Length: 61
Image (cartoon, rainbow, N blue to C red; front, top):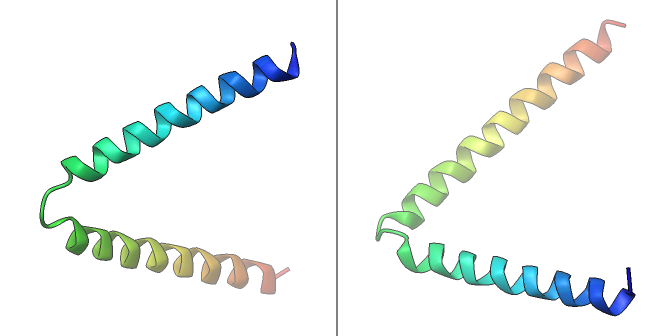
């Protein structure tokens, strides 16, 4: 595949993804910052739990 054609396809896909992200941002309800905060806190709690489990298993070997 021609490199210029590959770059053209990737740029077109990037434009589509940016437009979709902008659409989702505009369509988000007013309570989105609260939900984002909760989602972030939950995500980090899951990461911390996973790291503790991995550390615990690694110590027993």
